[in-house]
Amino acid sequence: MRSDTFAFEIPPERIAQEPAAWRDESRLMLVRRAAGAIEHHRFRDLPALLSPGDLLVANDTRVVPCRLFATRATGGRVEVFILGAHEIRNSGFELRETESPESRISKSESRLYAALTQSTGHLAENETLQLDGATVTLLTKDSAGHWLVRIDAPDAGAFIERAGKMPLPPYIRREKGPDTRDALDRERYQTVFARTPGAVAAPTAGLHFTPRVLEALAARGIGRAMLTLHVGPGTFRPLKAATLAEHEMHAEGFSVPPAVESAVRECRARAGRVVAVGTTTCRALETVSDERGIPRAGGGETRLFINPPWRFRCTDALLTNFHLPRSTLIFLVAAFLGIDLTRKAYLEALAGEYRFFSYGDAMLCLP
Image (cartoon, rainbow, N blue to C red):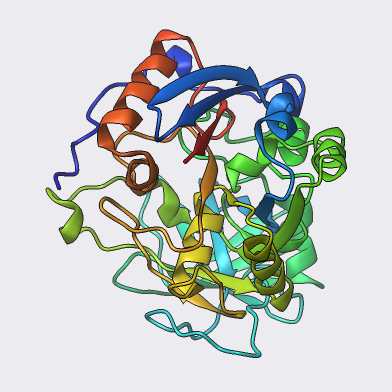
């Protein structure tokens, strides 16, 4: 399949620059796969659109404000984008029964981090950059453009949390220095159930939930279980290869606790549906699930690229946002809905003035 299958343009005015005034007031498009039908709702209607006995599985990763703006000895400005605490990482997926990944960023005992940089001039190895309350030393750079950096501060993890800006995707425009919306982004580019720090991008389908929606779901008899997948910067990488088969998928660390396995088993026993909240949750579930649709508890990394004609084993329904046309995420949606229905839904969203991407509106894909 060609990577330009969804080669339509999203007008700039449709790309949400700020979240909706209230999380659950965002719009929700309901797409019924079997009927090929599309309905229009608000996110607060979600409990009524699901059935008692269904199970929501969501991602509790927490976004770390990892964009640091430092100063060179020459006075020039450098952005240091912290990718995670330095560690030896596996090149592919390996399920480990008892090990769940630690936070890739907030390891306070570590001073070594992987980072990307952006500057107007050439940066040299062993160059020291100054921040307010810390220094960053650029140690070595690998062939992929990743720096190994050392942050000298009393507690490097706490410093990043305090001094960093939220790692908003490039299509959300903000000032590189202080921006009047920084406090808004710290609150709203984070789900209300975020718990485990380590992501450098938000699992955006979860951004619409509020305590009142969660309470209404519980009151309707809809269960909830949490896993962790730390969203990496590769989630925004566009498809550049001509075909999907040529695309090299980025790796992301995840942890599926035993409670998720138990909750899915119980959901299957009562003939409920497993509703994946977001593409990140879906990828984690599909990575570890067997032919019966039961996820195996454990942790590891996944490079799973879900695209047509993927046969979903665990995911019965999908809650997601509207994604970039040339991204791996829209092809995951197409694997669930089919190419024609996905295109129809996106074109209807454009015509109906839905808001797109991370701060945009949501879509509920039902069988």
